[in-house]
Length: 95
Image (spheres, rainbow, N blue to C red):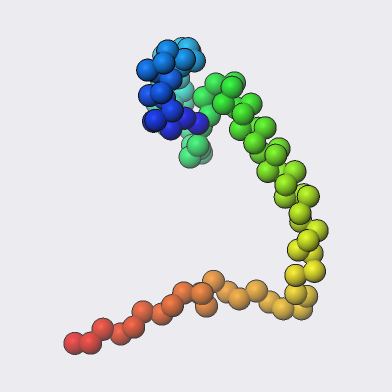
């Protein structure tokens, strides 16, 4: 996914990858908007998809590499604290 500054850089230097803007527009504004479960993130183009897949593989490898470090941190026989206990109660307002 490209940020605005990256797109501007490539536009100014003539290195922006070409593509079919009509197809991209159709995908974004028609298919995605009318999807029963639209995605919050969409990578348009094979280069974007392949780059994201490579990054995900790299992150998964890192997670797998270090996950055994934390095996002994799990407390057995202890219930997790409910999320309601995490919230600081609101103080009553004075009238």
